[in-house]
Image (cartoon, rainbow, N blue to C red; front, side):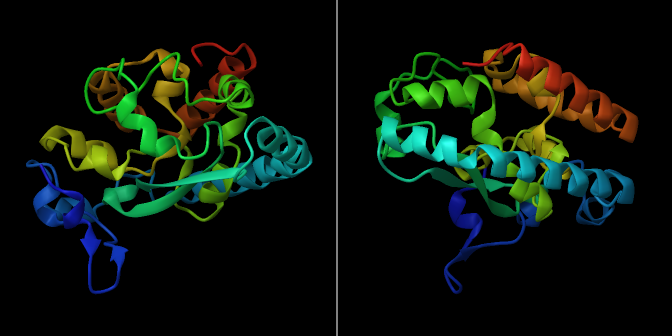
Length: 237
C-alpha cells in the first residue's frame, strides 16, 4: 500500500505527477511502464476524444442554464463539484461534475453506510443526494462537465473508472494495473451494470479486460452501448 503522502509534494504544495516506482505493479518495471498501453498515444483515439469532447461540451452548453437553475433551487450552493482523482500512472487531476449532493456532502460520508464491497463507496439510498441530483445521476447528466477533462487530455471518452486518492492509497499490487491507461467517462463498468456493480474487484476485472480487448472498434462499440444504457437508464441510481 501507499499513502496519499506518497503522491503529495510539500515543496510545491501539489500532488506529484505520477505514482512512485515502488507503487507500480510487481510485474511492471519502470521500463515497461514507459512503454505505454497502445491506447494512450493512439492518434485516432485522441482525435475521437477531441471530437467527442467538443460535441459533449456543445450539448452541455445547451442545457447548462436549466441545470444550473435546477441545482441551485434544489440545494443552494456551487453548481459544479470537483474532486482530485488519479489518472494515467496515478497522476492526480481534478475531475468535474454537476453537483448532485448537498453542500458539504464529503464531510458527511462517514455517516453513511457503505453498501459496496472493497475500495469503492456506494449507497443506493444515499440521503446526501438531492432530488435534482438523483435525476442527474440516473441520466448521467452530472458527468457532462467531464468532457472538459477529456478535451484537456486528462481523461478519454472510454477508459477505466477514475479512482480517488484515498482509494489508490489502499491499492494492492494488481490494482495498479488499471492505472496503465487513461480513465474514461465510460467503460466496461458503465455498460455492465453502472451503479449496480458494487464489488471493487469486479470493477478491476472489467478495467483489466478493457485493456486486453482494446481497439478503436471496441471503443466505438462501448460508446454506442453507453448511449443505449443511458437512454434506458439501466443500472443507475
